[in-house]
Each structure stands twice: as C-alpha cells, then as structure tokens.
Image (cartoon, rainbow, N blue to C red; front, side):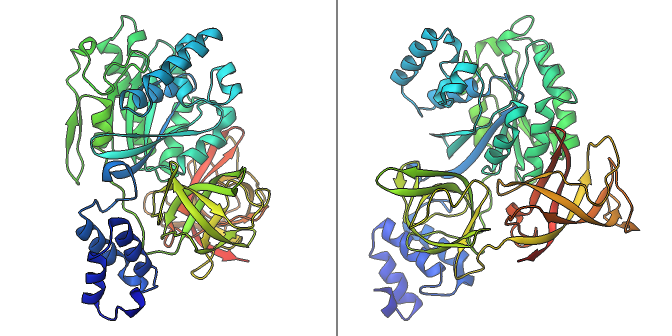
Length: 505
C-alpha cells in the first residue's frame, strides 16, 4: 500500500488513516528504508509520535510510558531481592495472593523472611541457599516509567551473571545494608559494593540511585547518625568510581518493612529527603519510587545498524528457539533477515515479544525475546550479537586496540598476559595482551611512552588485544554500548576500558 505513496503528504495522509499500531509499523518500515532513507529515522519517529500522541519512547509498554531498564546491585545479603520484590508488590507488579503463596512456601522451608525475595529468586538452589545465582527480571510501572527491574546476584562467585544483567540496563540501584558490620563488609577492599559500582559505571550504566537498606536493623533502629555515616562514605566512593555524587540520590529504606519505598515513613521523620543537581535539571523527593522517577530517559540510537545482545537462549516447546536480550542500536521487526555473530549464522526473526506481549517493532532499550527460524539453541549462547544481514552484520574480531586503565593488580602486566574480558555484550572471553603500544597520561590521554615493557596499577595504556575465542566487539565511536569492557583476574576487576579499533575476520 505504501509503495504507491510517492509524496511526503500522501504518506502522511495514509498514516493518519491507520490504527496506532499500523502507524507505528508504517513509520518503522519507512525508517528502515522500505519507503524512505535511513537518514530520516529520527524525523520519521517524531512524526509517528506526533500523530499518535505517544511518548518519544513509546515501545508497546504499559500506558504509553517510557521504558527504563534498572539493575539492582550490591553486596551479597544486602537485601536486594527482598527490596526488589517488596517494591514490585507495592507498585502493583504482583498481587497479594502470590505474596501469600510465597510466604507459605518460605515458612515451610524455615525461611519466612524470604517471601518478597522469592518474587525474583525462582531457582530451587536460590531458594534453598537464600542467595541469588542468576539475574532475574520483573516489570512494574511508576508514575513516569515502565520499568524492567533486573535483580543481579551479589555473591562474587556469580559475578559473571551480575555483569550480564548490568549490560541490559540504563540505570542501577546500588543497595547497601546499614546493619552493623554489613556495610563495612560491602565497602571494604574486597567487598562487592565497591566492585558492583565500578562495573556499573564501566559497562555504561551512567545513572545511579543508592538505597541504604535495612535501616530498621541499625543500633538504634532507624538511626539518623548511621545513615549520615553511610551516606558520606558512599558519596566519596561513587565519586572515585566516576559518578557525580550530587546527581546520585541516597535514600534510606527498609526492604522488609517497606519503609520509604513508595511513601515517606513515620519511622524516618528525621529524613529531610534527597536532592540531585545536574545540568539537565534538578530533582528532589523522599522515597525510592520518587528517586526512580527522577532518572533521565536515556537516548536511544535508532539511526544506527541493528545490534542486539543475547543474554539468554531458550528452547520453547511448540515454538522453537527464542533468543532474549536487549536491543542496543537500530530497529528490529518481524521478518528481518538476521546474522548472529560470531558464528555467522543467518536466520529470520519470526516474532518479537516483550513481557509476553507481541511487538510490531523493537527499538533500542527494549528487552525482548525473538523467535528465530531454523536455529538450534545449541548453536547460539549468551554473549552473541544479532544484527541485520543487509546492514553491517556483526562479525568476529581478529584483534582490537583498547584504551584501558589498570586499577588493581599486585604485579606488573606484560605482553602475553591473558585475563578474562567481560564485554558490554555479555560475553566473557579470555584475551591476550599481544602488544603494549603506549603508556598514557590518565587525565589528558597524552602519550608518555611508546612500546612500554610493562604497565602496573594506576597506569593508562593503549593495548592490542587478541581474543582466544571468537567474539563480536565494536568501536566506541560507532557502537558505544558494545565497546566497553572490564578485565577480571584473581576474582577481582583488574582493569577497565573501551575499544578504539577493531580488525574483523
């Protein structure tokens, strides 16, 4: 029908006579080049939003609200899952009967205090051990956003799963326990509070909210002095990581009792509220829900070629292979011919769903499931990348040049060093430092030394890296989300960096 629309005005008339979903499909098709050129993507999406009266981020979500992916991170046993489950319950994301069912089951196992945590902790091992092992997701709606909350494991043995969860997110809630001794354990040199904050910033999560949890378990309960002590120390550390502490809301909450989650608590009468200052506009409030609504909507790169990171792969009975993950750039529609890298598998997107709702198109930021045609679930895995076969399909990297900062290593790093790289697409691959090209000034980027023999903690360097297994990576200039990485060794983060150049196979 649109093929006969030869002028802009005729196209606009056609769009105006369609249903909202048909209008969305028409605009997306035009943006993909089926009617017009890809350079018009932003203009055309704006046309669609003006015609339908929807948000610029309208992505098939509840009540037309902007979609935001938020990770909840922090030290093991800081109460992340309980806080997340109670927040979801209070926001209407799960009904009372389900909570009562979880409470009954938890009491039968002698774990009555885990009823809210079980909203997200679904694995048998997680419920028996009382810790999160894999990342889990749940959707709820605030006054401003439709939020996909990703609960990341805090135990250092499952840091890979935490990293995969973080790569899906636009913002994070850093949860710290205020109980005596618990906060100190998390913020210590080997604590996960420190590492999770660093990984969040490294992997591109630029907005942070700090939830000071378990305020009901301080000495005395709901202690103002304890909260102020924790706030001061956390502010200093997030500044060291790279966040602006003035733009980070620090909120006292009780994940178990529900204090200050969506309504101000009488137990926290002394709390005057949080305030954030940033160039995009200041915000203030008292509750965690208000802090989430104060987050800025992220920019979505719709005008770039398609990139989707695979976070999970499922074999669904009666359907086939479903790849789940986040759209980083571009637009994905059913019927698109896809290439999956680094294996170079060609397939077709049959259907696309988000939170069990079919979508006519998926835009950047969407966490979706894609039904793939004629692909075995054994052929693809977490960390693979999906792209459009006809528009810059993803290919494996032969080697790449990375600019990195060495953070925490007891010795010297020489050419030949082979740690594990945790990439922004969720891949965890051992890679070799092939050539130390330059030692750089950390602040200015100025070259201090060509071809250094070694680098150590505190140094910045330009390094040629060779992956030991096939992996898709991209340059920071072209695909920012896919160019970030963290380097891990000895169960800690050794270095962080971005990819400047890629030599593809």
